[in-house]
Length: 304
Image 1 (cartoon, one colour):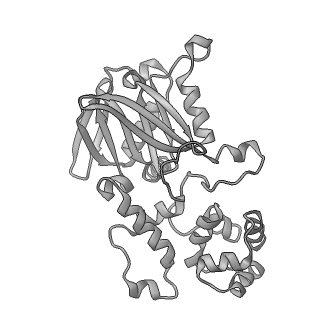
Image 2 (spheres, rainbow, N blue to C red):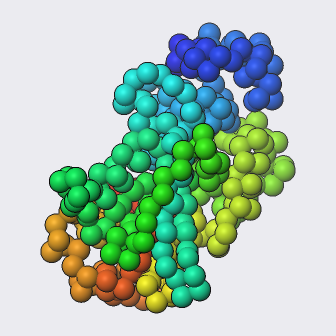
C-alpha cells in the first residue's frame, strides 16, 4: 500500500506537503503512512477522492474497503497513454433531447470516453452500413446514474466535450458511497471529533454539498429510480434486487423481442408492496442510482 500511495501521489505531481494540506494533517504524517503502509480508516476515503483511486487501493492486500463496494471507476482526469485507462477519463456531457408537451426537454449526464463510445455503438448508423440503432440505449454516468432511454421517442443526442462546454458536476464514487451510508442520519460534531470515527470532516462536507445539490428527494437520488413516461408523468420507487435484476436482463439485451413496445416491465415501489406494470412503449427514460443498482444486483446474484 505504501508504494501505491507514493506512486499515486507522484503521478499526480503532489508533494507530501500538498497532500498533507489537503487532508488537514502534517507532512510528517503522510511520510509515516508511506513508510509504514498504515493509514487510519478516517483518511482512506479522502485519499481515494484526492488521488482519483479506489479506497481498496490504499489497504494492505487482502483487506476489504470500509463501506459498500461499487463498479464505478476512478473519475479524476489524468492522461496515462494507456487505451484502457483513457476509457475511464471524463469526456464531457451526453445530452438527451426529447419533445415535451411544454417544449423541448434536455437531460445531461457526465460520462467517460468509454461510455461515449458505447453509446455511439448502441446508436449505430444505418446510412453507413453499421449496426442498426438499438431500441433502447443503456449507460452509466459519472454522477451515480444508471440510465436507460427509449430511442423511439428520442429526438437527438448531443455529445459535448468538456474542453468546449462545461460538463455537469459530479463527485468521486467514495463521496456518493459515503452519502448513502450516512444519509439521513448525518453525524454530530461530537461523533466527528472521535478519533476512531471512519469519516473525516472534509469528506462529510463534500457529502453535504452533494445532498444539498440534489434536485429531488435524497432517497430517490441515493436509493431509488425514476421512470419518465411519454405522457409527461413521472413515477418513483426504490431499487431492490428484483428490480435491478429485471432491468439488467431487459435492457442489457439487444434482442427486439425482449424490448417490444407492448411488453410490460414490473416495478416495485417503496416498501409498501405496491407493484406497477409499465408498458415499455409508454416509457421515455429510466434513471436509477448506480450504486444502489449495483448493490441490489450483486445481492441478487449472491442469493442465488
